[in-house]
Amino acid sequence: TGHHWGYGKEDGPSAWHRQYPVAKGNRQSPIDIIPNEARRDSTLGPIFLKYDQCRSLNIANNGHSVVVEFDDSDDRSVVLGGPLDNPYRLKQFHFHWGGKGCEGSEHTVAGVGYASELHVVHWNAVKYKTYNDAAAAPDGLAVLGIFLELGDDHRWLHMITDALYMVKFKGSATDFKGFNPKCLLPSSLHYWTYLGSLTTPPLHESVTWIVLKEPIVVSEKQVSAAALNIIHKTFPTV
Ligand SMILES: NS(=O)(=O)c1c2ccccc2cc2ccccc12
Ligand SMILES: [Zn+2]
Image (tube, rainbow, N blue to C red; front, top):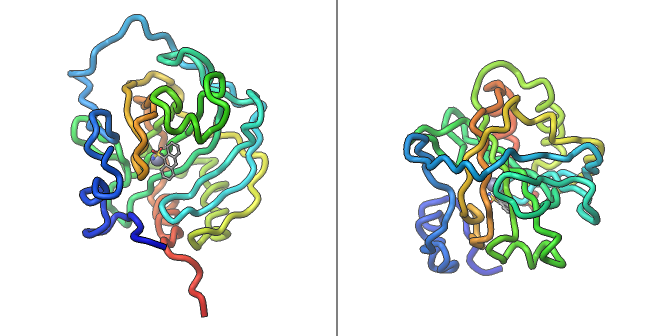
């Protein structure tokens, strides 16, 4: 149905502005984070992640990423503090995997990319009635960005990568209960923060980005299994 965006030459990021003019906006993500140029803001306190009561629902392949969704019908799991004026409700998390050997992270740090990047999406349910309203509002979303660097196996990531074969094809989804994203956090919650946007169409300029300085460590095997598992096409219809 209609021309769809992607990551190819014709439909990739340089072409998105045709269908999504905001691509040429003044708070577009991702950005290159330059630590020496980042301003230290003493008014910013620590962030707090209250995920103990979170309820994961399913894991799905939307053709661009693998997304794990959560029950966001109440304030059971939220992020608060840091740059945020009120708690933001946990909605979903997803990964940006690279291909074989190429860096998949969206943000870079002083020009250096990481193997992958995890985005934990939260929305401002205090100010907005629905997630969709929040997704289009300048203070509607808060996304926690966590870099993945290559090293030893991550002890919990297998719970995600093992489930990927169940959602091999775009549009597929399966139950995914009892997963708490706390197990994917690094030891330090020190962060950079800036006002930005969704990194994929519709590119809404509605995201307060909170990018953690400390990456988590995953193995090449885990990343390549994941990257290879995401097939950007629907099931071959006979
Ligand atoms: N990269 S992103 O965090 O801007 C993003 C998505 C990226 C890929 C697939 C789905 C996404 C859905 C999002 C929903 C809200 C905020 C960011 C989102
Ligand atoms: Zn993302």
